[in-house]
Length: 258
Ligand code: 8X3
Image (cartoon, rainbow, N blue to C red):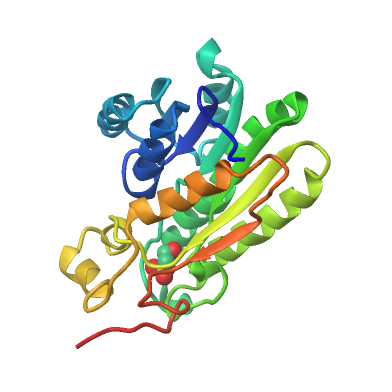
């Protein structure tokens, strides 16, 4: 029987857009209580409203930059009382910057990707998981990628952060064995979001070319898979889920028409 997440608290990082927003709405539809954060409160607020309308038991929005360890620690301890008992953590905040040969790339890009995708994920996990262990229940969903399974040209550091996510998820799953806390690595391929626009510094034309001639996943496809993973019976752990559209076989093998 499916596990009910009605009334359970889910914390989602990077909730203002893309997969984070879609996941918020999917879990809202199942009646979860949502703590939603992103760097800008202005960008989270509309999703807070949407999640309320979608059926969330309660919604709390707040600004958080996951790269700031002290901010992460204080944000988690200062959550309103009703949101303290986090049962689902979706470590979604992440980004790519640039697509360049490693030895030519701007190290600032590396810093931002490693700080967000790797260190940010660790900081939030470190702040939230002790409570889950104490309560004997919880589910950490980390956003990985096909990029963590197979590197591609110009993406070594981004792919490295996603390979790190895969390894961290695996290690965390081992460390949490026997605690009642589940760990899922959700690993999508191409998803049409602002991902490529962010990667190319707002160059929408270049971003559009990434998805030209093929059918990418939608944020809702990934959110649906996350919703499925967190509603499996409690004895089931979806360890990892590699999810691509029908036009993608791996990081580099695509069915691009014309
Ligand atoms: C996103 C997938 O292939 O655009 O993680 O890097 S890809």
